[in-house]
Length: 315
Ligand code: AKB
Figure 1 (cartoon, rainbow, N blue to C red):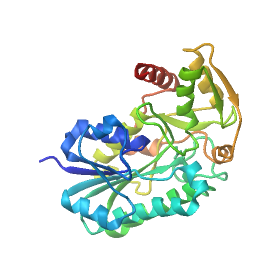
Figure 2 (figure 1 turned 60 degrees about the vertical axis):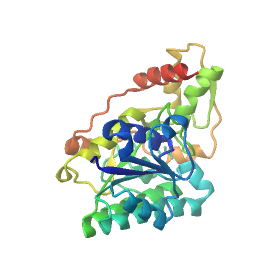
Figure 3 (figure 1 turned 90 degrees about the vertical axis):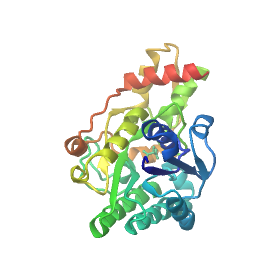
């Protein structure tokens, strides 16, 4: 019998592709996808799905027990921009959902946990270029504070209770299957949709705002590689820095112009500019490379080519 894997937050930007990738690897029936609401057609048709609130401890415990779950991926979270608008709801969702699964793992109700962290754990006092694994972490957003606290709890549960919890500090993620929602890096997905639909885009960040980014296929592969690595290779139990590329909105627009020469971009920075300005520009992910062999594949040019081709095919 294949091991049963539970995904909480399966309908979000990462959850959607993670669910499909895990189903391709382990078989549809082995993956129990859950979310607070139903997701897109491809995901819903791909295998078992239950509506589940990740902050409801009893409901999560029941599904773990009913399916004899061995691994959990907790992908439910409120992202940076939305969290600034609802700080207490963001804290409740981001922290309580994590506590619940850490507790169930401590009670040995399942064996292995993945929890996503973010470049948002860093703040304005962090070195921006080649941000090291170990450095100042003074986040200035609600989301970043919750991710930093979560990292602390992950390493605590590992040290004190031997919980096999693994985590990545994702950069901004670029995907075509599912759209992001409520993040500061979302412009890097919106821009492709608008480039194809209207030939122009108004960006909510300034043109020279450089941020670390990654194509979703790399992010999913990183997640699976970390989860499949032998426990002895996983020396970091709060969260690994993870990098791939780094660019500004102006550079992204330039890469789109190589395919759509008439594409135009304008800039109208909003409150997300301040969030982006507090984050690193480029990440040093040498610990992930050393420990479990991380190697990104997609550059900005690859990403632009893939995004435009895939989105065009879907039109
Ligand atoms: C966000 O913009 O909030 C996220 C992230 C960098 O964690 N994409």
